[in-house]
Length: 343
Image (cartoon, rainbow, N blue to C red; front, side, top):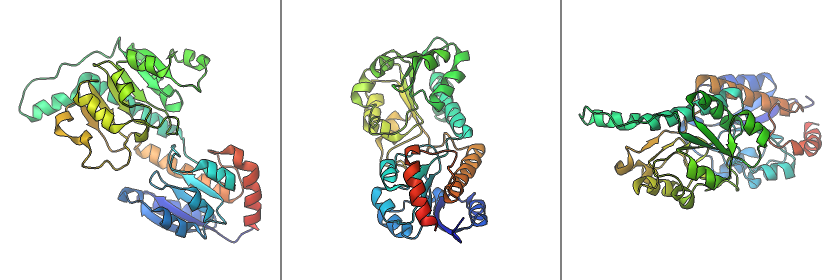
């Protein structure tokens, strides 16, 4: 590196922050720590604007909203390295315009964990485990009637890494697999024994609908009242992707009023889920299983994503293209910006 050091702002999990900082410092970086991810605190846009003024790299989580204003406030900013897959809170188009390289961490441990979590939720819904536990806690020695998964239809919204893995995991269960994804060729779906259909047809035919698309303007609120009303009254909705993809109030009404039988939700908008959310109402507690965005929260995934994030940042600061680049079209402009800053 031509520079003596690089300045990096880092938001990280408390369990990994010391190791991450050492790796960065060993690579010639000076590190400024932000909030721990586990504190569930948000840096405001103005705080980030002040923090980024003298920084070359940002290492962020799913909490931070990296807007155009934030990036424009950093004249020497080279890269934004995101922990996790989703980059909906980063203005990637603005980063590309400015010449800033954005990376994420779609490591195998992440998408395997999310896929396993989605299948687990399908099984919990089918076997009505929550209802049985609730009745036991009420002192009732009776089980809620469960159903076979075999012979049911599972609709997968988004057939990328996670959706494809869900399809593979479910094949031995003897289910019919449907998917909707405008970016996936029929040949890939055929290899997975999945029928590609439009969204409305998938919703109307599925017993379980599991969401695995990324959050974009195109997918925002794509599951709302109209879509929920088109589902079977016996169907269940599973969302381990992003909360913004569904209308939470519509999901609550769908369960409460019997449009669908239940839901298993791991993601919300915003997060953390407000204690005032109707999803937490006792009247739907037997039918809605809620978890705090934990589908990929395994030690293996967290370790692997942490290392990938650090390596992405260090490589970009050294002028090397990281393994996981979100906006590869930025590379020519990024190289020019990098060379001018690295002098």
